Amino acid sequence: MTNDPKPALDAIAQAARQAPGRGLPPVHLWNPAHSGEIDIVIKSDGRWVHEGAVISREALVRLFSTVLRKDPDGYWLVTPVEKMRVTVEDAPFVAVRVDREGDALTFTTNVGDVVEAGPENPLRVETAADGEPRPYVHVRRGLEALVTRPVFYELVEMAQERETPQGPVLEVASNGASFALGRA
Image (tube, rainbow, N blue to C red):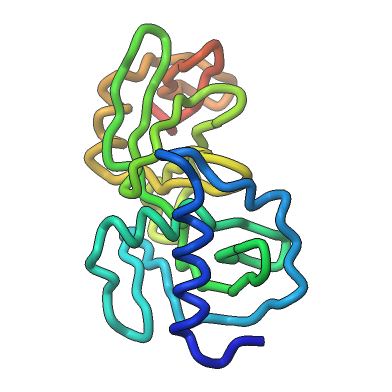
């Protein structure tokens, strides 16, 4: 277990740099023997915070996002030799843009991932305790992006109304799949 966060951050950055271009390292194949915790919190608004300070270098956040993995016991930054548990307040990513391209809805996240909603990357909407919709899109391997309010409003504008036994609902379609956004 690593006590000093500096070597752990350096190891994570080094592993992430090994991915050519925007290609993602095969974190799903790595099962390092060493694990620990690091004081990194991914806030619900997409900010990454290390030891109480926001990581302001966008390139570093993007780099770390490439080695993020969700396991049954939580979120981890993973290298071939070590994995470090991080805290995620809501979803690890935030969908900051949506574009309609043919029959596909393409989302862009705060860390530069581009994903098309569809059967492999579903869009889902939960209802928060305050009654507000909480929409999410699957990005990769169990990692999701919270859809920002402005992007959700764009989705609502694109939606079609469909009648159901519970009443009319708004839904959008992408890559042959339909996703309910909520009651009309």
